[in-house]
Image 1: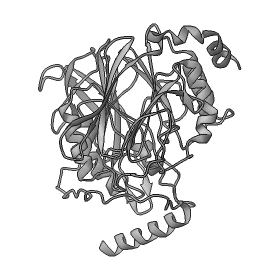
Image 2: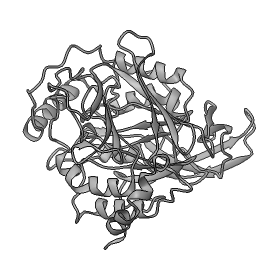
Image 3: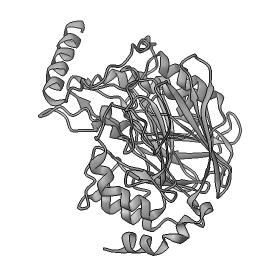
Length: 437
């Protein structure tokens, strides 16, 4: 077995060296060690790596894995412990990746569910009971935000801090497990995040570390798409790499930095259609996530988002997007409202938050002098909390955990574009860009 694993590691290393670019333009400090998970024997039909995600209005998708291919994809649930008055059946999938074969991956949608309510549930008709809380149906609503997680000591610190805050939905702008073709690390990541991800919906988009494409052997995003199914079908998307959802009074759009985004692409057409259907009376806040930042004053990954920005920023500006969250750069940065590379009071606040705890360490080299649009920047691990109080005001805070304490290092009140009157000012421009063929 060890010989086979060594051969696998060597093969992966050679193939990746041929297919992945190497960046040497910045030096990262030493990270904390990668966490190790002892393999505990489990009954093959018992669920593991349980996580939940929003799946359309008043519904939740429960995802888990079993080693038994005959285990049923049923979820029993109710509002009291051990009393399951409802049940739903779902679908399964699996995949092979070189010498690795996944377990049976289950995805089951439950609902309709009541807002802001606690449900108890069990997967597969047996095993432990889990508990989830649905998001509220109206303001206030709180999002925890952290990207580029990985599975290091810093990851554990970040997750511990998030667990201490009262949030409704976790937003993750790409780079989840850092498996990088070593598929057992996807399993380890699933176990690591299960305590949080089984209790609150995790809404994720893909990063470069989810690609895992090996020429002539595997397609890109095969593992990610199989394990982390998001509500793309519910939002009329044809790809799990981009989709949208609504929670309370917020319309959230998750985009793909690593799938086509030019004006002739399916993603561009879908985004334009999705934005044109947003009802700002129902969802006055509009938030977008993708992996590669457009506004970045760190030396790391400079210019990598320029192509996507050139294609899609006009759409986001016309639609009046309030906030954009990105990852990729392993540091934190918050901008003023910006558009076309400079400050604009009717533009979008861009926040880079790729500091969740990845194994590659922090990106500490910044461009000097600081660009006029950059309000705050720091290379530390941490997470963010977005508390949307009402239709016009939200409170954003970033919590550093370099010292293993949830320190609030950056905080700001944000007025929505509806609250500032900007949407009324550019209504005509918006109709021309979003409605035109």
